[in-house]
Length: 93
Length: 488
Ligand SMILES: [Zn+2]
Ligand SMILES: [Zn+2]
Ligand SMILES: [Zn+2]
Ligand SMILES: [Zn+2]
Ligand SMILES: [Zn+2]
Ligand SMILES: [Zn+2]
Image (cartoon, rainbow over all chains, first blue to last red; front, side, top):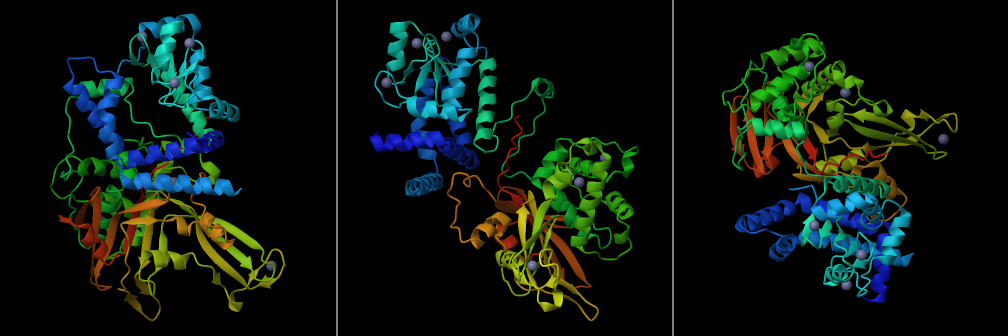
């Protein structure tokens, strides 16, 4: 992370906009069914390992690559577009 | 899920209480104040490596910030501190158990902070999945019978007998039965009746009807009781041979609303004078009318509730074009002068209608019937309508922004959540001529699954077929529902 990036990041947190964007992302992922799909992936991992104790780290390593791939392009595009526009308008002020 | 924490957390709570968690959570996970956001913005870096991640945690014992790439592990070895709060999600990691642990009391604190944070940022309450309470969990365990809803189910579909030109009623009933939020209300048995004899309450009758539709039986239903009830309470309708489905729709909402008022619902608070009954919660929007004096530019604004929007069909060609024309400023001319409160004389003025608040169900009535003293006729002009409709361009707030020349501010984070998307879920059609016509309805039973209801006959239909139909009444449901934020 460069210094500029850090400042932009800090500004996003300070204004609360980071949380707003995070909430928007959360909503879009629920709307498109991603959250349910990931739940099912997690269930499968737990079922496969019923005999051992499944830890969070184990779930993360097994599920993350597939979960990332499942995020729809439309969601990524919308978020990217909105954050970009937002940062540009901030710069102007 | 076990939400009793672990022995290590329980020992920590016994010694130090919940305060350390509360502080860390309110300042670095869900910031409940501007001051907290300032702390979070400037100090959330790993004390060991100076990086902002991966997965920042705070030691619950000494508020040492460390990342999950080995540095909380280092800290727990050197300091013998075992409990860490994940700063992204607020969960607790126990280095002795080597996993995240969950504690009911701390989860509740986290939830209340999340609500406070949402409120301070002006966003609605975040989505929370349904969790059964103790009573519900008990009921679920006791009632073992489950009905699995498959993607090809025909549940909720049932034909309706024609009692002699009652297709106008059948169409409206099919529409109401397939209104998602109304269905949830009735299947959740939310109507608690206060009426002395249940045979007189239309809301009770509709409640029974929902049970019939979802009972699994397939034989067509006969609605003479319902029709009789509506005719008793909306006398202006009784006696006609063939009726107008639109008129019947409005009359039905009105009787339902009146009977809701006699139920328990009337004890609930009415916000700014508006009725809070289930019908008004779902179907009522606010129509803003701005009259501008052409001499002094003074504006007089009124807002009226509406249940549906009637649109002229001659000309436009699409629903959006109809709405565009409906919300356009219109010059009232010299024959229709209005007394301006500023100038204190009658002046020419312009009038503009916009939507101040949107209902959850937006109902559009295409004015296909023209009644005048000379002629009664049906206008069969083609009007296309979309499966997904964004209502933003027709809102008062949007129109105002356009008028002052402001650019589209939909990207501002405050506007980011403004979501006015609607999905088509029912279409009522009138077939044939004015005096020898017949009504049918298309209803969306599940996402992407459409059916044609022609009295007792129910047949599968494609979305294409629905969108190609003429369209008389169009019903749209809000795509995303907001949660109300009522945290004090
Ligand atoms: Zn420590
Ligand atoms: Zn580190
Ligand atoms: Zn532990
Ligand atoms: Zn009742
Ligand atoms: Zn009401
Ligand atoms: Zn004036």
